[in-house]
Length: 271
Image (cartoon, rainbow, N blue to C red):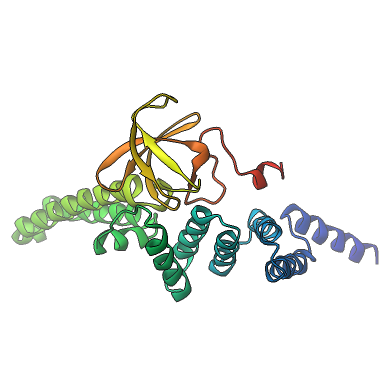
């Protein structure tokens, strides 16, 4: 019996070390139902807070993000609704409700958005680990072919063919590496942010007296270039650049990412 008790204690300790709670799944279901009831009862702010608690606890699903988008829209927060729709699309781009609601808000608010080409969407959907893995494989193939072509006498008749193929693999590795850097710095979800303020504008410098560049409707998309305390310097659709107050912007991904000195109220209150 003592050995059995000891083994059970070891198992419980292991589960606790993983942060696992047997009731955690049930608690999340209860929270989800609580948020749904608040939404159905018209208390959209309470629904938003409860949905966000689920997100902070580690829940990540397109349906949850879609519910947050709908609750924010009903609460009059158009920018945050677009933000959560974009996050839902990142998890599941096939959901028709997400596409339909984004199109509805796009026509209703006329927010600014980058026009991505098909190949950019293709690159953005590839996993980040794909590029270094392929580059490493091509480099090894090029190195092996080069060594075999020079060092094995039996392959001397294929030396030029092997060397040319090795050079091709090295050039291809360089191209793939550049594409990976382009994806990481330009089109990865982490580079983009959404205007969540009801009204915002980009200005020429991070000062209150700076001249305006363009008005930014809620839901407008930005590509983050630099974060300077309470300001964000970003690319703006239409080949423009400007500074925007950090409190008016939220990064698309990862969720609840600190941007400058700002953190969402729901996240800061939990610390």
